[in-house]
Amino acid sequence: MSEKAPQNTAELIINGTSYLLPIIEGEQGDKAIDIRGLLRQTGFTVFDTGFKNSASCSSTITYMDGSKGILRYRGYAIEDLAERCLFIEVAYLLLHNKLPNREELESFRTMLEQFALMHEDMIHFFDNFPPNASPMSILSVMVNSLHNYYPEMSDDPLVNIDITASRLISKVRTIASFSYKKSIGQPLVYPRYDLSYCGNFLNMMFDNPVRPYIVLPEVVAALNKLLILHADHEQNCSTSAVRLVGSAGGNLYASISAGINALWGPLHGGANEAVIQMLEAIHADNNDYKKYIAKAKDKSDPFRLSGFGHRVYRTYDPRGKIIKDACRGILAALNVDDPLLEIAGKLEEIVLCDDYFVSRNLYPNIDFYSGIIYRALGIPTNMFTVMFALGRLPGWIAQWKEMREDQSTKIYRPRQIYTGAPPRHFIPLGERS
Ligand code: SDX
Image (cartoon, rainbow, N blue to C red; front, side, top):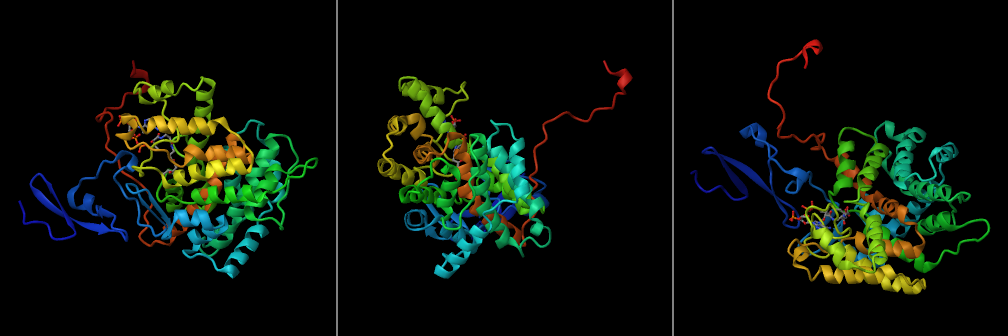
């Protein structure tokens, strides 16, 4: 055995040989063993399915403490941001690492409204999607296609990143609302310069020629809060997809489109839609909570309680707590009485008394109550994950920008453990049995 490893070093002993690996410590005390030299030193890789034990990068954007339920964007507590900011303020914070002053906020707002229109040729795309096309598939196609109409990314992407970021953050509202209007056969409603970021989106979604939409301050406030709560979440699945595509030199539109497709999955952003479907099924089943909880615990049944559990949080998701607390007030202000809210509350109560879930640290996450507010705002269920993408977009862009600015970035290319066939001699076609 060698002498004790020096401070801030991990000692790895393989077949009697000692290897010293540096320990990295983050600003908030998060620690990692730096294995960037492991393969070269030892000939070994590490095996970590789902990257449960791996840090893919260092980042200055978002900090999470999974055991304490802490979430901060650029050092600011999510509770403060959700309560006291506009979504575009938080988008600016994520992109520029500072809360904007009045002047910066106004110029950002002007830039967003300047980019709200979509190229008229792109509107014809909507004529060719089938009526039941998934809004997430439309969103990823349209975002990817933006590159063809706005090629400013083709030269140095970081030179034009602010323009592209504003263009994307602004246009996704138009794409989302146009896809909704097309799906219900209503005329498109164009963005207006006199409305706020959230007010514009709501108006494009719900205004129509025969019944003008009234943009209620309570609805705008609720949407601002929801988008802020979704704005970033360190290296989650979809953010990792954005970084991975960007690490190969992919342009921002292509990288964001990859993030949209990763978010679509029901284990990730698609969970908010799955939660409503689960609550509606329980409601239709005479509120038979026990049946669904038993299904979730049954290893032979792929069913899981959507909206519960998290890779990082070992306690209540702080965002879920904020949304749950806001639910009642928003529904009351909008005079909405949704039976699913009671069902969600009862399900949470039963789950948090059940040792199967508590022993596995399965608490409500951001997706458990968010759909109940989206319903109250009039957002259709199949658009819930699109709403998640609208919120997450500034975070994806900030993470992509950080990855591209980081000189130590390497193309994402994990290794594997091969478990396939041993070497085999080739058999010509005519000799095969
Ligand atoms: C988001 O990463 C992020 O930050 C994501 C996100 C963001 O903002 O970007 O926070 C957004 O995606 C939130 C999560 C939304 N997904 C869901 O609500 C789907 C339901 N939840 C799960 O499928 C699950 O909890 C995950 C996917 C969220 C996390 O899965 P992990 O970390 O891979 O955990 P695991 O599958 O290894 O589960 C550990 C144990 C297993 O049981 P055992 O093998 O120990 O017996 O817990 C069980 C699982 O079977 N389990 C569940 C469960 N989640 C985990 N059992 C029933 N219901 C569940 N929801």
